[in-house]
Image (cartoon, rainbow, N blue to C red; front, side):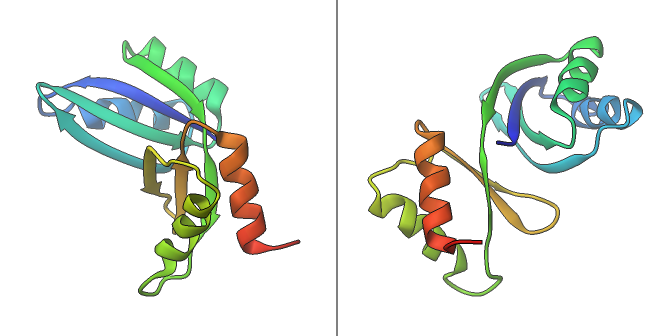
Amino acid sequence: MPTDFMVSLFHRPGTLAAASGALGEAGVNIEGACAFVCGETGVYHLLVSDAERGRRALIDAGFDVLSERRVSLAQVEHRPGGAAAVLSRIAAMGLSVDLLYLTGDGQIVIAGDDPEGIQRALAEAVGPA
């Protein structure tokens, strides 16, 4: 399963660019991301092409990786209700989602307390490959 990093940032100009730059300098592509401010702290969620190198690059650059967790990826039709169709399947299985953002290629990154359950719900929603 893909991995999401949650990184703490100082809420000041340049910290988001510095974290992203540290990954770029290490040759790690950012596949998807979201960032927001909570109080006085910036929070940066990242899905990267290489979790090991990504973690090392962030830590070596002095960033605090608050968490690392498995996430699921889902292709979503780019139409009204496309995301709702995927999320409804997860909800129908009694599963909660606590993280959602987009990748650069239009997939959604989904995480919750039961990563395997979410993965199963997504596989059933799509059907056999």
